[in-house]
Length: 269
Image 1 (cartoon, rainbow, N blue to C red):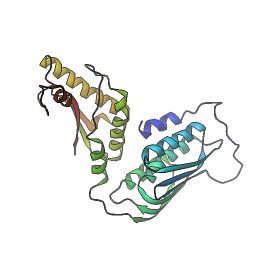
Image 2: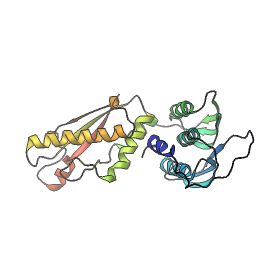
Image 3: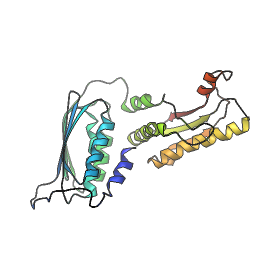
């Protein structure tokens, strides 16, 4: 699930299911601290509910699949949905730091350490600021990180484009195993809004060519519909089917036919 959908789920916490401590009557604002060092990420701070805490853990696991994670989260009464959305957006900000820390409060965020070169820090800070209350302050105390051979958007797209989108045999029903892949495409489109996608459906040469063409078109549309549901604007995508007219392997054997039954997601700028 992409983080915008996860964030929407968190705005409605279960009543009576979470235990919270009463917040003392002081001017102290809630805080969330992220520390990233040598493959270790620690997250410490205030959450609105157990559901919110689980959302932070899930978002961190998704953004840092290879890191060792440590959490010290406290449920605090009185924190609203705005705080939940801010902290989830902050996880994406931390993903643009090579090493250092990010400290988030309701009215400000402070970043210290090394930033990724050619990363998406500005995009993710802009998103954080849009979710924040008026007067939100951003303090950057960052040095540029190591050089990168390609831009961040190129790297993200290259990491996901070769993985297959799978359907149940002979249908337009996506297999659940493809949901995580399509969620990664949705994340990519949020982070790289200048990109446009072309979704092309293909079949093998078995059966009636006209039915194959219709199946390929319907499968491409099903992928586009999933991405729209995951938050990608429909205006950023086109989709079409070409049936069996563009094979990449021999239709005379099972292996080749399996290669020809495919969805291609192409990038357009």
